[in-house]
Length: 76
Image (tube, rainbow, N blue to C red; front, side):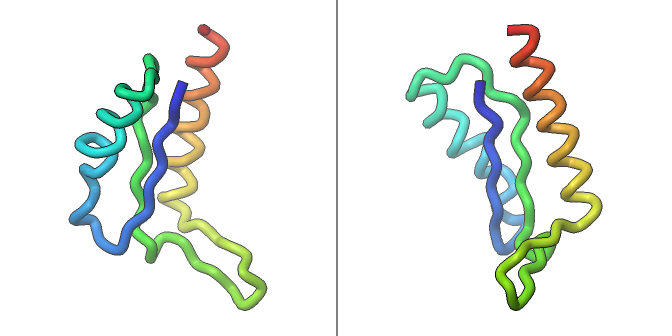
């Protein structure tokens, strides 16, 4: 099982997961690809200690996708 994650500079690359990652993952043998999460770099803040803080909306989407992945793993 695979949960594709991507980050980019603009929303213009939103479909990169569906049109670029998923075909490659399938070609590599992935049989269950969970809905991916695309983030715009402005949704991720980095401080002077190189620690990252996620925006609330992004955090919610990541938590939802991680829960879906765990559900699929347990269903197995």
